[in-house]
Length: 445
Image (tube, rainbow, N blue to C red; front, side, top):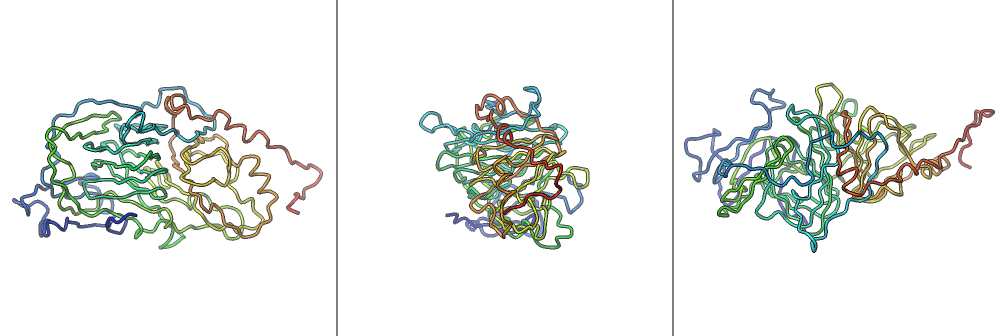
């Protein structure tokens, strides 16, 4: 069980101090000449100083040593992390991956960072515009290593195994069916307890927000109160020359050594923090008369572009819910989209493809590539009696959707050996039901 303490609320101005050092936060100012407990004051800015107040993000950290106390960064092993979207030729086909294989701990120790694999992405890191989808496959904790991302925010979706995440703001336990966001520049380390797998959506230059609700009103979808922020916790631990800080900068990995744990923040205040969210808390909105509402009604978080209503990335889920639409083909309809759609499955079976699309795998339907329910699903749903029914119980599928046209990496297409070459066959049994001499459709008996 998760027995850690949290602060509730999305994007709130928060204050927190480790109870071992009461009064560690300075009173009435951010940067006194001498901080309480002789701590160092350090500001972490997630936005330009001059951003409007509504989008200005920063936190003040009061720490035993400032984060600048490290040796120079040097290039380190890159593994399968990349932002080279031209490794292989573009592939417009419907793509599906079998569950990505987790290395066995008995064969090779792999932690969260060494287990990162870039699957697809688009855009340019240096201009702060774009995204990447990564898979993490690991079997051991990071120990005296931490990671921070100079390029963007990580939205982490564990699929197998829970993650104990140490951050400069405190500790979070994140389990399958929960997500967490580690924002740009925040140092963190991941402990795992078994062979562990999950998905990451990385966005460059922008931050995740709650979507606007419009006519829905003041409440619904992911409610702000359900987002949890860790409370201050510090360790004053010496690691002479042995703590490694790994930085992802312009798509490359660099490492620096330091003598102390980076998790030495005794107190902090601000609105730029890591946070987590339990997907079970999502308030589902759905069609209750006929047809489908667009899947945007299932948006948990969005990272907006400069174009109104168009996202660099949306994080969308397909949670358990009631289906009651009358005179309606209830599964997802056949579709071509100006967006790119990467889908993953945390648990259960996705309603439109109950076979082949498995937990720990994924699919990518690229810009204007047609997709939709497989033949078996179509035949079953076309003949189903339209009574109220529970949909997706015991299941949680999700989608990373983007306005950018994503390229797949060499690892995704070749090296992973998980690409399902037979994916297209799920639509081959589709047959014509055209009745040119009879307008009346054949409904369920």
